[in-house]
Image (cartoon, rainbow, N blue to C red; front, top):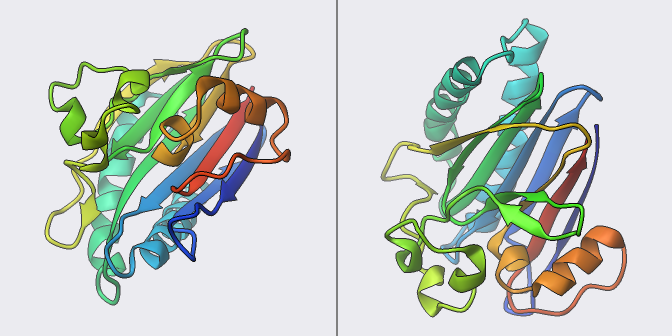
Length: 223
């Protein structure tokens, strides 16, 4: 297992409100993407969230964390996010969308709130998204990312991590195939870029990036 992460600041902000991080030992990994909203402090909150999740996960893993079954990973993530909530907001403000992915033993467990997404890259270089964004444009949870990208109502997220509500992530469970390739991304990546631009960045991750208003962040994971 190997991965590549990159974040590009959009034109709408002076500072990047996205943050990404990962821990990978070659056979298993945890991948985290956070996208801060326009609320004050959200950029710093996104960074703190990612770093905190990775730090806590690392401690659990060193203690012999059970990551062999979907249910066990889900329980750990639910507990971890609940414990982190008061710690993060004890001295910070803002709100973030996030996706946390754990890949191990041929299984992928995803926990997410908001419009950060995870998808599977096909052999043709096209991304098949497996999470359904929490936003007003997708209130029925039945629209594709391609259609959502064209609807201005997608900017109104209906679920995120914030001080007034404890974490209530949705979970997605996905069996990992041989040589599977995953992408974790903020909405700047899946909605602001065309499918062709997405494929180009996956092909040349350090190449030039199209300038868009929103921050663009992604993690490309290859097994």
